[in-house]
Image (cartoon, rainbow, N blue to C red; front, top):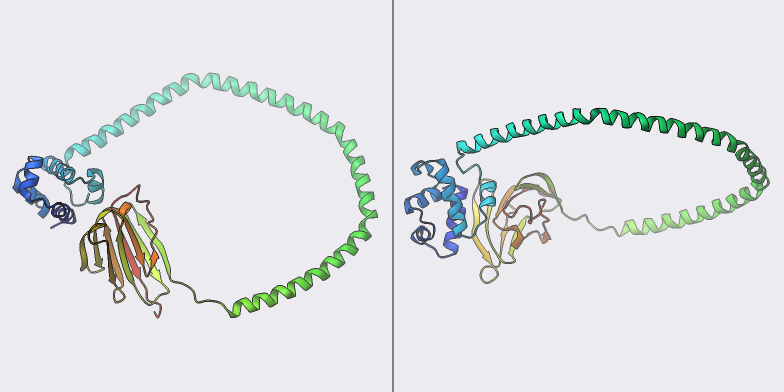
Length: 301
């Protein structure tokens, strides 16, 4: 059974629907529904019908077909129509570029004339500015001479002020050193480090360090399907979390080096690692279904 088939089956069972019920809702033959859940698409009339049946199945379970196709695209067969659509899209893009180049060459003479006019205006402005600048330099020089005279007269006063400031600064520095020494004596131990090391589409990898325990807690704020596995694929919990049923699930993974969390609806799911709330690298509003991998490096290693 594929992850897609497992996801659809779990959603169907969560709604207390049998395959016969789904067959009545979608008008899809029961044997095709079984094929979708088992990942056996060879019994389908073709890849086009397989994709259409998956879409109808997801809609009947009130799941978002676009998210299903994006998350499980490796489990869903590809049709030739998609390849043809991509080729047509490339041909249209080349045609648009060609038409754009033709329009550009039509207006090129006007652009050149505009650039020439702007260049002439800029040259005239520069000459006028240079002339005005030369006239003002004499006045500026006079002002500078007066400023130098005043600066020399006040030099002795400035030196006296600097001497006082230097003495005051030394006193403050010594005081700050004493405070810093006192603060360092009461320094607290560093906290655990949980950071993102890789993110691509719905898949994000975190790394957990500087701690000797690894407990994961998933909390539902509505209704969501989750799967908690270790790095070898063993599932510690798989099912629905709801506010009117099982609200949360906590698993101690301290003996594991890696955990994989598949969250069906991130908008309604909070993840806590040793009590620290995990911030999704990809906003739940942009990617509802996500796969979170946490690599655990114990503190004593």
